[in-house]
View 1 (spheres, rainbow, N blue to C red):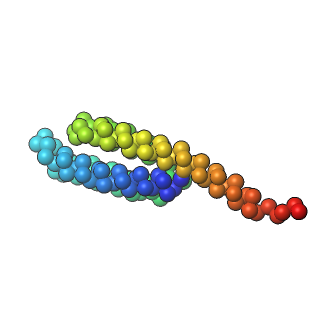
View 2 (cartoon, helix red, strand yellow):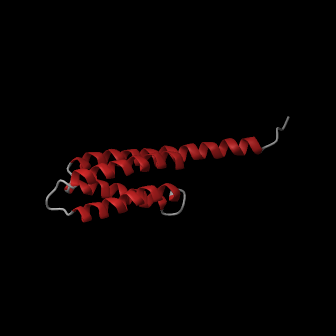
View 3 (cartoon, rainbow, N blue to C red):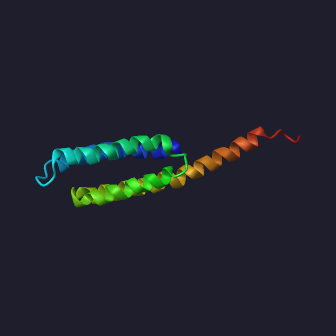
Length: 116
């Protein structure tokens, strides 16, 4: 699960940065505000890569997905991009868990001695 989720989070890191560049063109938002919010979100996306398997890691990932969708208020394209990354996040978590379960079953079978 870690690899799939981390890949999604690194992709989000770049999307957040690009959204920050677009948001800077909005005259109502100060540059400091844009980069403070984007910087925190970018930091969270990278920090979550190491926290995925810990308790609450996936929940924080979902919070980041909701924040990306909500950022569409300031950068309308983020409604779409946030939804795309939320779908990628769900896919990464869902199939990542299945892969982890399959690896655990395979390892358990490999540890058992042959009965023959």
